[in-house]
Image (cartoon, rainbow, N blue to C red; front, side, top):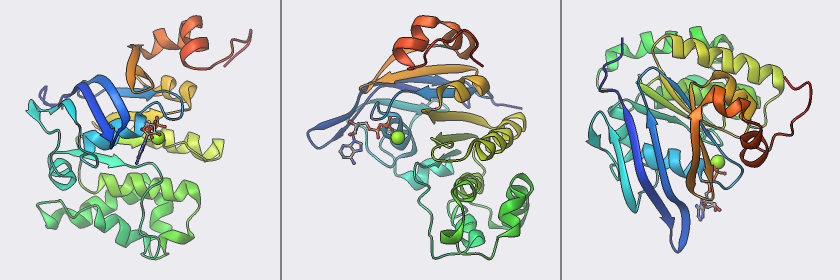
Amino acid sequence: MHAEADHLSVDHLEVRYGDLVGIADVSIQVHPGTIVALLGSNGAGKTTTLNAIAGLVPPSKGTVQWRGEDIAGLPAYSIVRKGVALSPEGWHLFTQQTVEKNLLLGTTPLADKKRIPELLERVYTFFPRLKERYRQRSGTLSGGERQMLAVGRALMSEPKILLLDEPSLGLAPAIVESLYETLTQLHQGGLTLLIAEQSVQLALEVADYAYVLQTGHTVLEGTAENLADDPQVRRIYLGLADTAESS
Ligand SMILES: Nc1ncnc2c1ncn2[C@@H]1O[C@H](COP(=O)(O)OP(=O)(O)O)[C@@H](O)[C@H]1O
Ligand SMILES: [Mg+2]
């Protein structure tokens, strides 16, 4: 189902905000068909990394290879066209516009506009709540619904890989659980996922592989299983207290 070439490789990426360093040296591999978690505390560089891959901020050093092509520094719209979509932190919705209009905005880079009804129906199948509210202004949605809409809009460009920036942030546990169930279904349908999360435990439950960022550097990587089980990793990098009966 996956072209072996649908591979994302981020190598020694640096992004500067003027004199400030957003990320200093980030390297990540995402193999097709996997779920990769990008972990790290607030300010570690998760958003900067995803935004740089998606073309929202220009890298100052390093490469972003997608299907063997260096896409670093390309404009966002051309990166979306290549099959890389971002569900951004804070959603970036047009709050005065309806749910459906926001979804349609996700199809702007789509070459074949005839596919729009089918793609819309697909998003509504994954997120029935969005279908119920398709004529509502997105500004009236709950946080969970806005997150669904941000993911749905990203799906409208028919991505091969979906970058998710903190999908669980600020959402009630039941909403997060249902959102992650949907993400798992999307993954089973063939979508590759790169998920930035502060909810480490949750991310490690769904991910195959994970990277830990600290002050703009990838400092640690491993299978999700190994990272979740290593007490030192849990304590030092993931800020998880070890309790006798965690889970
Ligand atoms: N627009 C910006 N201008 C200046 N500094 C920024 C900007 N966005 C992020 N930073 C800085 O870049 C670093 C990484 O931030 P960010 O990528 O948002 O981390 P995370 O998503 O892991 O919380 C932080 O030191 C942050 O203060
Ligand atoms: Mg962030």
